[in-house]
Image (tube, rainbow, N blue to C red):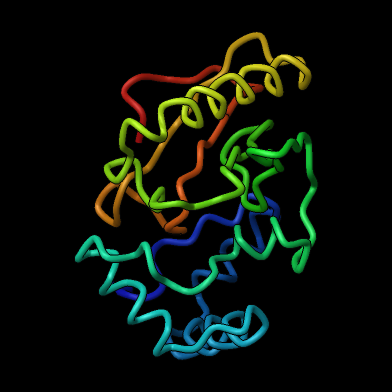
Length: 175
């Protein structure tokens, strides 16, 4: 049984490559993970600290996330929409033919949906409106909007974001 990394979905690779990935040793996968972390300027200490803080609900004063770096234009992204409040861009690991994220430009306590307050109502509504507009611009006839909250909810980046998925028939219940 492989414990790390979790069962990785590699949608871009042909089946033969997926089968080859399953045969890579745990050590090989760990080395690849460390290499990717070094490219993103992360350390195992910051990652471990982030995961610990995520579980404790203390992510608000955490260092910049990958989304903060995308907003600052330090990391490239396929941007679909941008205004003074939010940014929408394609997901780098799509779970559907169309999969994009909508993120607020300022975290301001919104690392997780559970941290939202009455002060965030306008911004949260704006994120939903932008999700709908961009989905329409992308030609989606139907789509799903997902917010993962906390580590147990599947949240990987602790900067609130909406996943918008479409371009195929969605099933219920989701994952």
